[in-house]
Amino acid sequence: MQPLLHVEIEDITSWPRDFFEIAIEKKNLLVSYHREAKHIDALCREDVVLRCKPPKNIHEDEYENLVRRLEDILNLHNIVSYHCTRLTEYEISEIRRGGMKVLSPELVQKRLINARDQNHLSREEYDYFVSSSQVQSNLSHERSRTGMSWLCPNRSTLKECSGVYRLFRSWGGEALYWGHEKDDQISVTLRRIGIPCIVKCSLPFRDAEPYHPSYAKRFLSYLISGEVEYPDPPAEFDMRIRRDLIASEVLEIIDIFNPKFGEFTDYKSWDEQCQIH
Image 1 (cartoon, helix red, strand yellow):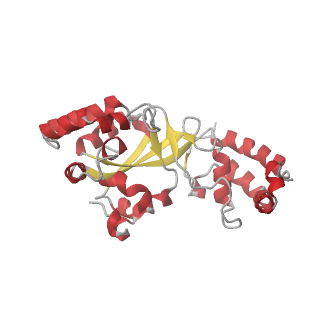
Image 2 (cartoon, rainbow, N blue to C red):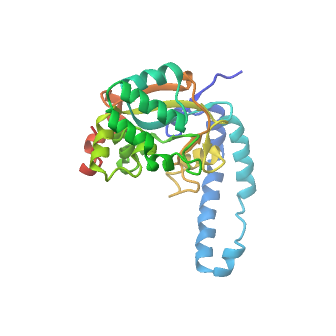
Image 3 (spheres, rainbow, N blue to C red):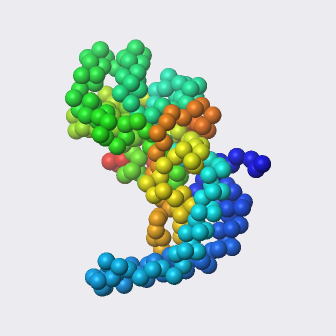
C-alpha cells in the first residue's frame, strides 16, 4: 500500500509518481486537446451557428479517459491548501489543539465571547456585534460561506494582494468585516485584534470540493501551462470543505512574524491600500 502523500498543485515533485509518469507520457495528448479546444472556441466566436452545436474535439474521449484514470490516483492522497485569516494567540492554540471549524453562527459567537473575555473587545463592541443585523445577514444559510471553510491550493495566489489582504487585515473573517469596512470605528476594532496567519492544511481529495468537479484536469492544466496559454479549466482555483478539520489536517499555522509568511505572500511589496499589520 502506497503512503499517503501531501500533494501541492504547484510543486510537481510532490505529485504521486504514477500520476506524474502517466501525465508526462500523455503530455502530447494534453497539448493537442487544449489547442484543439481553443481552435473550436475561435470558430464558435466567428460563427454564431456553431455556438449551438460546436464540433467535437477529436481528442476529447482519450482526454476524458485519462482524466478519470488520474482522478482515481489523486483520490488516494491529500491536497495541500491554504486558509488566509487573522487569529488571536488563543485561537491559534485552539486550532493546533482541536483543528479548524467551519463557519457557523456558533463559531462566530464563541469567537466573540472569547475576544470579549480576553479584553480584545469592550462590552459595547461585543454587544454591537452580537446584535448586528449585518452580521446575522452575513451568517444566513443562504450565503455561500456558512457551513464550510474556503481554502486556496495555489501558493502563488497568496502573493495576489487584492484577493487575500482583507482576510489578513480584519479579524473575524467575512462574517464580521463584510459590510463594516467603511465604518471607521468598527473597522479599526477588527484590525487591532489578532495577527495575520496562513493556516496550511492537508485534506483528502475526496472530501474537498473545487468549483470544477475534476482535480485531475486542474493538475494537467498546470503541467502544460508552459505550452498552452490559459488552459481550461485553469490551474488556479479555490476549494471548500463542508466539515471541521481535525488537528492532524492542519500542517502548520504561519503567522506574520514567521519568515515563511513573507516568503509566501511577499506582503511588504504590496500596494499601500493592501498593507496589513
